Amino acid sequence: MTELTKLTLAEARDKLRAGDVTSVELTESFLKAIDDADALNAYVHKTPEIALERAKAADARIAEGDAPDMCGLPIGIKDLFCTKGVASQAASGILEGFKPEYESTVSQKLQDAGAVMLGKLNMDEFAMGSSNETSVYGNAVNPWRREDNDAALTPGGSSGGSAAAVAADLCLAATGTDTGGSIRQPAAFTGITGIKPTYGRCSRWGIVAFASSLDQAGPMTKDVRDAAIMLEAMCGHDAKDSTSSELAVPNFEAMLTGDIRGKKIGIPKEYRLDGVPAEIDKLWQDGIDMLKAAGAEIVDISLPHTKYALPAYYVIAPAEASSNLARYDGVRYGHRATLAAGDGITEMYEKTRAEGFGHEVQRRVMVGTYVLSAGFYDAYYNRARRVRTLIKQDFENVFAQGIDAILTPATPSAAFGLGEMSEADPIQMYLNDVFTVTVNLAGLPGVSVPTGLDSQGLPLGLQLIGRPWEEGDLLNTAYALEQAAGFVAKPGKWW
Ligand code: GLN
Image 1 (cartoon, rainbow, N blue to C red):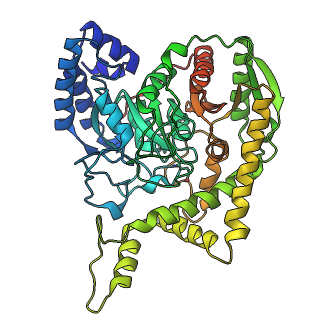
Image 2 (cartoon, rainbow, N blue to C red):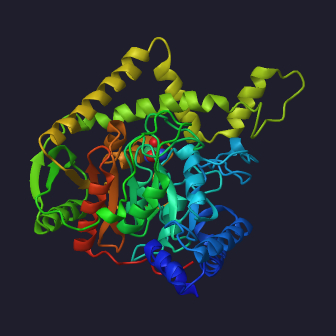
Image 3 (cartoon, protein in one colour):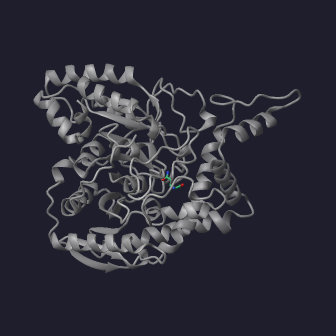
C-alpha cells in the first residue's frame, strides 16, 4: 500500500480512471504516511475526516464517469490559503484560532475538480522568508540530507512545508505561493518541480495577502506533467480578483510534446554572479548543453537592470506588506493581547501586534512603513517602482528579439542547514531570492526543474522564465529539460 504514495499525480489519475485503485485507498495511504512523518513538520493542520469524506465523494464521481483530472487526487494546501472551517493561520501567531468562513478561489477550484485536501502545510510566517524558519509552528524539515552528515536542512521557503511534503511523498502535489521565489526556491531545494504562473493567472482571492502586486499561487509537484495538470485546475478568471485574467486557460498537459527544436533560449549574462558555487555554474552549463542538444538555439542576452531587482523587491514587498498587515489589529479575529488596567485601544493594537507577529514580519512592517512615509516615499518606494518598470522592460526587449524562454539557476546554493543563516543578518537570507525576484517584479511565469545533485548528494534546480501567458510553452521547454536531465533521485527515508 505504501507504494501508492510514490505515484505521480498523472499515474494516480490514470490508475483511478482504470479502476486499479480508489481515492479512499490513495487517501488512506497518504494519511498513514503523514502520521509517520511528524519529524518533518510539513503539515500544521491535518484534516483526515475531510479527506476521507472527499475521497468517498470522488470515488462516486469517478464511477459515474467523466470526472475532471484532479478528481480523487490527495493534495496538501499551503497554510496561506483560506480553507472554510479549517484553521488557516499563514503560520502566524496573530491568526491564532482563525477558521475562515470562506474558501480561497484556488482551493475551491481544486475542490470542485474533486481533489482531496489532506491538510494544511507549513510555511514562513505570512510567506516572508526563504527557510521556513519564521513559522509559528517551527520550521518544516527537508527530507534530503547531505551524504556526509545528518544535520537537518531547510526545505526552503516560504512554501517549505509544501516542498517537504511533495518530496517525502506525503501528498501527490501541493499548492504553493510565490511573491519573490517561494515556489521555485523550495522546489529546487527538495528536488521537485514548481511553477509560478504569470501574474493574474490564478485568483488571489482568499489567499492571505503579502505583497499584492507580486503574489501568485502555483502548483508544486513531482514532475512537469503533474505541474501542467494541476496548474490548469488552479487557473482562470475570477470576478472576486480584479487582477485575474480573462484569458482562456489552455490544456497545458496537451502541450507537452518535448519538441523544442528552433526555440530560442536566452542566457542572461547578468545572472553570472560572483560567489556562486562552481557546482551551480556547472549545472547551468549542463542545462544549456541539454537544451542545445534538444534542438534549441542558445542566445546570449542582457537584462541590464538585474542587479537592482533585489533592493527594489525588498522595498516594494515590505511596503505592500505593511499596508496588507495593518488589518491584524486584535479587533475582529485572531490573537488579542491580554490588557492591563488602564490600557486603551492604542495599547491593545501595540501589544497584540508585538505578541502576534514574529521578528521577520515586524521587520518588514517597519521597513515598509518607513519607505512609504511622507519624507521617504520618493526616495525609496517611487524609485523602486521605477526600477521595477526598467526590469520589466529588460524582459520585454529580449522577448521582442524573439527569445522564447530564459534559462538561469533557480537558487545560488543547494539547501542550507537549519539555523545556519543568522536572524541578525537578514541580507544573507534575502540573497536566496537573487535569481527569482526579477520574475515576480516583471509578472512573468517561471518554473524550477530539478536537474542534478551537488557533491553532497543534494538536489539542484534550474529556472526557466517564459513569456507572459505562455505557461504551456514554458512547461513544454521545462519538460524537454526534464527529459534530458533524467533526474530521478529521491531522498532516503530517515524519518
Ligand atoms: N523569500 C522571499 C521573501 O522573503 C520571497 C517570499 C515569497 O515568495 N513569498 O520575501
